[in-house]
Amino acid sequence: MRPPTPLRSGFSLAELLVASTIGLLVMAGVASLFSVFSRSLSQSQSTVDLTSRMRAAAWKLRQDLDGVTCPVVPWLSPDANTGYFEISEGPQRDTTLTFVANAGTANLEADTDDVLMFTTRAPAGSFSGRYLTADRTIESPYAEVAWFCQEAANQPAAGTKVYNLHRRQLLVLGYVGLPEFSGNSIAGAVPAIYETYDLSLRSEGGRLYPNTLGDLTKRENRLAHGAAFPHALTLDIAARPTWQAATFSQTERAWEDVILTNVVSFDVRVFDPQATARRAGGVTLYPGDPGYAAGTPATPAPAAGAYIDLGGGQGGRLGQPADPKSGLVATYDTWSQHYVAGGAGLNDPAAYTRAPPYPVPLEGVEVRIRCYDPSSKQVRQVSVRHSFRRP
Image 1 (cartoon, rainbow, N blue to C red):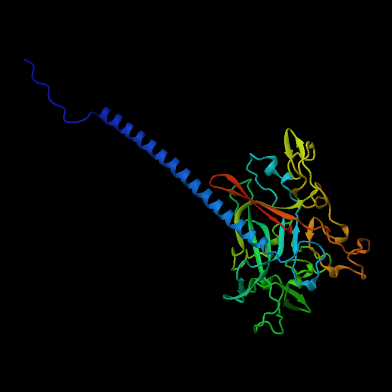
Image 2 (image 1 turned 90 degrees about the vertical axis):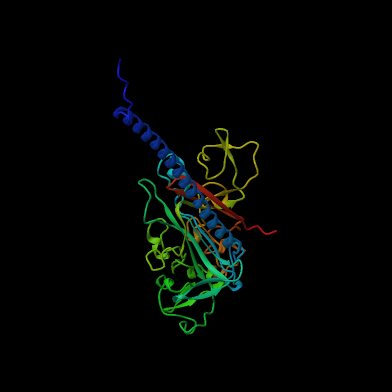
């Protein structure tokens, strides 16, 4: 008789290897699944955070525009003490840059050189700013604000250029009444003094005086404007990083004025009631859209009016070059009556020696802000529109 077969006390080496391999494959699959979920969650959170920050910036801009202190029409009187409104359109356009021409590439830079400046009223209470030291503040119901972009120091990837969107706020307070302001003036020079005093100041006789709204009606008294007519922005908006002097970027107050990062477009447009639509390839286009120049008049013609780039060469009067008597290029300004020379009346344009760039009321403004999210590699946009029409 054959002896009984002995029972095995364990697994063979081949069985262990097969089991281990299966276990490793299962673990790799689970790890890969968790990685996908984690990446998706991270991108979703990044998108939510970006959207939240863009909405906060848009809300702040809406508040500023709601509080504009002056009627947005040329020839304001400094005696009316109403402040100013100014748009400086840089040479960059969405239609001429690679954001539109090569939408699928890594180069996302678009219109980032526009500057929006005006005086505004606090939505409730007062604006607050630094006075000499970090633990001292001063308040005013009015402020001069400037919105502009500055190239970011740290770029996310080759071929992708991003900017920081700055909101610079200077309080408008005609009389300070504190010891540092002897005779309502202080020694110093702009812009260096703006690191310690968040006050809108002008230079007279070697001293700095706080501006009133009436003072700011005159271009020469505003932030970053030249002393000689036409008092253009002295910090060249086309040559980065010369706007550095208007920011806190290289001071102990760095990032205090940055309201949004990873910006690829800050496009300020004006409403032109004479702008008309065209058709190209079955699509209705408006001034500023790619292909508009080659299109044909739309039929039936839609209602006239669209938001366009100031002085961009398309649209009605606001799309054309500025009046050469202003000495400015693609700038909308509420202008000051004190620029009228020789006693010429405001109703006699032929007698003007200095004229506003665009002698028409501004009916509305649109600001398009686009941001690039390095995590999801997506571009998101928020638009703010504000009407200056009075009922």
